Structure formats: C-alpha cells, structure tokens
Image (tube, rainbow, N blue to C red):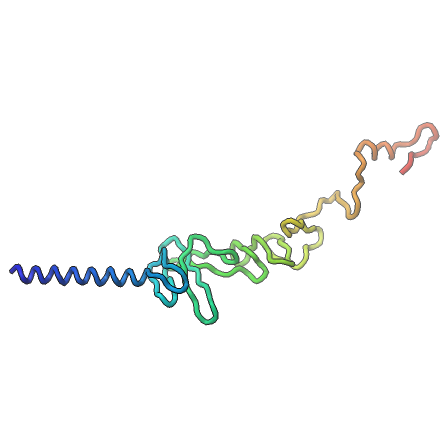
Length: 171
C-alpha cells in the first residue's frame, strides 16, 4: 500500500514542478522587455494578456510586435478598459497626448489645441497662447494692435472738455 501512495506523491510532485517550470517560461524575459504583470507571455512576442488592472501596450518593430503590461499608456497613446483586455490605443495623427481618440490634451508641432481638437490655426475670435499652443477666446474689450498704456484716469481726463477755452482737450 505504501508503494502506490509514494508513487502517487512522486507523480504529483513532478506535475507540480512541470507546471511551475512552464509558468516561469511564460513569465520569462523576451526581446520586447520583461513580462512583469503578464498573465501569459512568450519569449518571441512578450505579453499577450495582462493582469486585471494593467493595460496591454503593443510596440511594433517592422513586422514584429511585442506586448508589455503597463500601469499607464505611454505618450501618444491612451488606455481603453474592456471586459476581457485593457489596451493602449494610439492618439490621432495631430495629437501628442490624448484622453481618448476624439479628445487631445496636447498637440504636435504646428497645431493648436482648441476644445480638445488639434487645428492648423486658431479659429476666428481666438488667439494662440504661445507657451502651450492653445487657442484662447479673445477678450471682447481687447483690440488688435497696441493697447493704450496710459492709466484709466489719464484717458478720462483727455475726454473732458477744456473749460478755459470751451473746447475738448487734446486727443
């Protein structure tokens, strides 16, 4: 009776070691980087499925692609949560970074951000803020050209009539 029990334990132990070895291979290092956070991983293509809260980012090099599980999608990509897989998707062609396919946060060079869209020029009634390349609504009081630098009081005095001569002051 002891021999069959020992044989059964030996087979169970061998199966456990084989399973452990297979898991180590799945979570090994591939040419696309490490397999941290992967549920399944191959040496040739990296991660193919990720742990529940991570995003699968697929990097392409020529005709090859490598998967990597990431907490946040890299610049130029945004995360989409799905029932089976969370994926990183590429932003639109004019976006440098985005919140979704239709909403940019920052535009690529030569484009201006206006209400989540990247435009070649700011629309009428707006002006470009150089530091961020964002289109801002123009202040209705602000006119194009030089602004009068004098104080409000001085400008008001110019409009008052000159009482001594009975005519308006200089303008």
